Image (tube, rainbow, N blue to C red; front, side, top):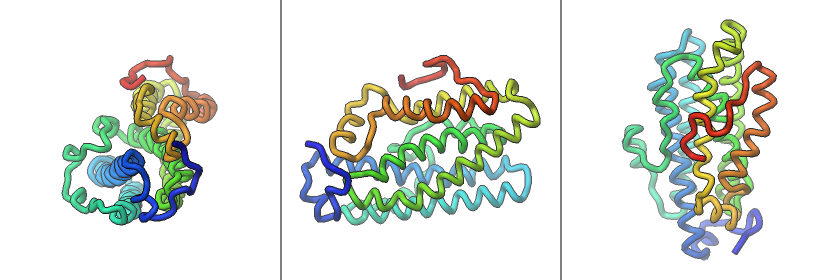
Length: 241
């Protein structure tokens, strides 16, 4: 069964849907809200200490606040379908199981922090843009403000990377870019994921993992090349092909 965008308008409609649809929505939302909390922790616990000046420290605090706002939006959608996400507030990053990524744990320089926002959060933005066309209207509505904020996050990360390129040159930045690029592409998940096929079938996503990753590469490659960075060979440093 496939659905058009907006076919499931309310929580009552959600509960009328087959169990598979309900499970997919629940999984997607739990992953989303946990990811937002991880983002808040990243900005406060990892990026803030690396910030080179008071302005950048303030930005880290602002970004963390936005991530908490995003959590609250997603948690409200979950609450309406019977899931209380507030327990996640007391978890550490290592406690969280729905949104696993090793990308941020290796961030120990300001350039790596910029790469995380420029490329990693650009992946998140791509995923959110699919959610904005969700067959479950409550998800589509939730993502509107989140997308606006993520555009700001990505743009700030790009400014950091561009500043490092101006100061040190693209050749010096290339190795860190390749690491960030591989980890960011892995955020789309496994290309043979059965779950991603189901998301597309039910209208909860627009593209499978492999298609979403391919489209991301096509969109980002010209921007990166214009900055003097070169796309690594396919599969380099990758875990999920």
